Length: 70
View 1 (tube, rainbow, N blue to C red):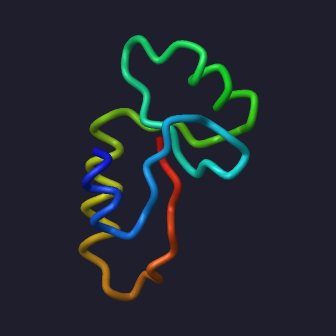
View 2 (tube, rainbow, N blue to C red):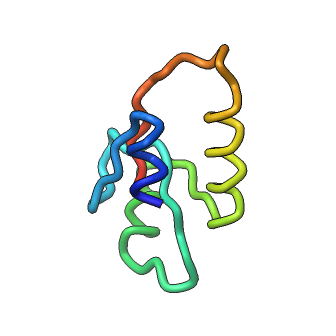
């Protein structure tokens, strides 16, 4: 996932902050999930993340904004 994000010009972070755009959460997300919820960060499942990456990489009209994901 980190490599996919970086290939699209984004940043994969090891922590959740107010600058985080999305959290990819698995079954045992723990405190990072709690932090993301408290900061109103969009939480994605693995499948939702894959769809987002496919949409982002397949649309040349979208700006190459840097997304920060964990």
